[in-house]
Image (cartoon, rainbow, N blue to C red; front, side, top):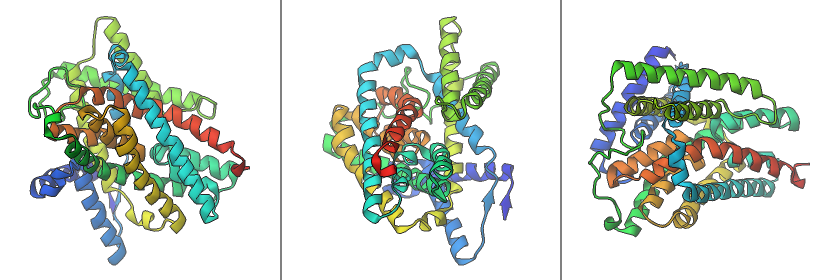
Length: 401
């Protein structure tokens, strides 16, 4: 059964409503601060898995809107990025980036080490490491093609997509429980008291439930800036494809949006923050709902035992690293809790998962401006550059020759 693009959009909206109802009905989901798209999307994915396994009935959604929604989300990150604000968080940003790079290296050490222990091609270790986990579906598919073309690794792209799917699921599930445990360690006195109060200096993604007052003109201007960022970002991505400077399209979109936003601010015509916030949260919620409800969980079940073991080991390591490295290195305070939840999201999954994790935590415990300042830029931009360097360095090791 094939579902049209419009019906898929309706289904994604219903998934968000389902997630909202599930969190209202099941206290444990609220206690674990599971994001609404994750709760609703996984239920739908499990229903589709049951239909596939027991009724031999497959539902195929037309996900033509999924990539534009993702690019829109990254464009709003760029439009929301004020370089002056990033300068304020400079030392913390550098420290967080060092923590993130440390995880990239460990993911590949664990992946390659276990691959060698199982006697399989160590390239599978990279696919089950930072290539597909921190890298996500786009980076995983790109490197999978490289591994097949230049290293002769069969089904590398399929394995990369399956690993990235596993990471997306686990990244959305782990962030909340990890944050909850850390909050118990800190005690309730460490959390901000204004869990419901609107903060006038909040970032676009920080208050997804707050009504955003905007005008049609401001909304249209913002849509135009987002479309411009998508258009020029795609042109740049196509121009540098195959070169030493190749980057995923969403990174190019983000870069263009950053230049547009800060250029307009310098000219005294800042972007409409409320319109950016509205579009940011809508595109984020719909993208995550669509991504999770269309998961082919049976592809994960088909993973070879060694790769599945590598992914389970990566999950355990992410939790341990979050508790004993990310949280402590970032100051062992409330901001560190939210940063850690975000790190779980993009360390295993993707930037949208990280933002959803942080929104779920701050909606329950209070604001964390620092986390929403640092995580979007690190998770959406710096990590892809760092990951490309780390992967290239690992490929130069003797085990790959």
